[in-house]
Length: 552
Image (cartoon, rainbow, N blue to C red; front, side, top):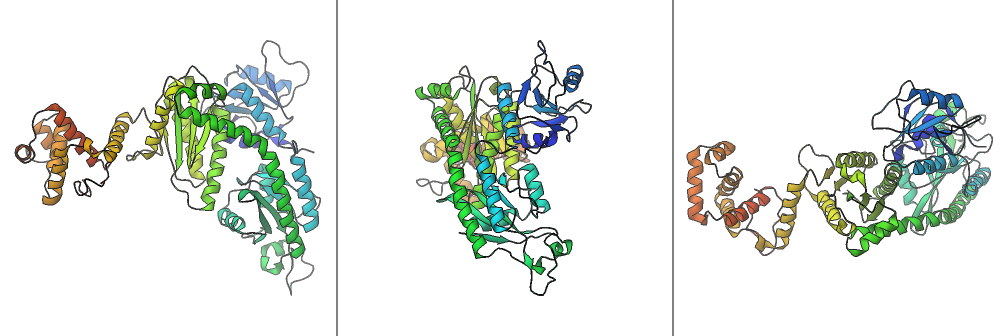
């Protein structure tokens, strides 16, 4: 029998899709496993229940909200702006992003509600959990790599602790300080691992990684209620508070037979998880392949965009998010969890989008009117980045410039890739946009070209930089600021905090030493080289080694 979910729990499970509880009682129960669409022209007759999609209903339309509550609906879904609240709502109100498609919201919420009971093959996992629990004598939980609870044993009389209770209610392992260390030990082992309860009231556990070859699919956890340690009172029951507070008084109840059962169960569970994942992964890979083809631009991009179901009228933009660290198993697991967060958030915000990964970079392809609201795009992607940071990832991201046609998508992707690499200024966050950094992006592109093609750099500037490095002079800085100040000697002196005569002397010496003239092309090349080296965007390269100082 399905455990009835509350409005608050439903909102928590939909949080990664950008849906939140904006009003009403979070403890109110939500019945049913699907949604009803509100039709103001032909209202529903007879008793109603469950979740209703408030198509066209505004958050301030209290009359309609009261009518829905009076009809018997348990909760209503509205499109709301970020930060919207309705404290006096007559029923729980779930706020979805304004861009969310109603058809997708119906599918998403129905899927979450259906998952509250064993369906679509997951009943096999619940039966497996009950069978294993009966054989080893401890409550069982089966988790995926993101630590979501896929199934759990439901035998009467099972001894559990608060951590398990919270995991079952939220279908997610609670975020505890010891989690990363404990999961790392389980994933590194080739068999069952004994995990000691570390806090008062915590029970011990035995866990084993669920793998298919080298692919991590999840983990299997069994509560180890323990047996009285030698010399401890035989009457100490597993749920005796004194026993819980003194874990050293008990020893493991898991012998070789129980450990063998857990290991064998992990193998069977791996086969089941592989079977369940296959169909979904095939669809995911197809869409990812189409997305990558679209990002390449050219004649194939239009067909890929059409097959992805995106808005072919454009405009289009590409978002790139990169993890700057990738050294441990835990970071790889965090990355996989992050990919799930990105997918879930997009499903609620922009369900008609492309998603693909290349190495440690995830790309999002967006199309349609939302692309013209770049600040809105950035604020939503910022939410995704923040959730990645909470997972312990070091992320940098960029939102490429908008393009009108699919065949130009490679330009937006190049923008996004360069923005990931662009040095951040003080106060800038991990995510920046091409629109906000266009001039810096152009200079950065020139710097990258000059790194590969030193002939693009001004020989006069390189000679000046070498002279400054050898003789501790400041010609390069003076000439650069003089150009930036429109060749105004007084303004240059103020910027350098020196006397105007000092500037005049340096300019005269520079003309003599380096042959600086009045040709605008030469001055532009000179300034660009000095500007790029001053910003640290040009690295020393073979062929002109020693021409640039270590720092400028």
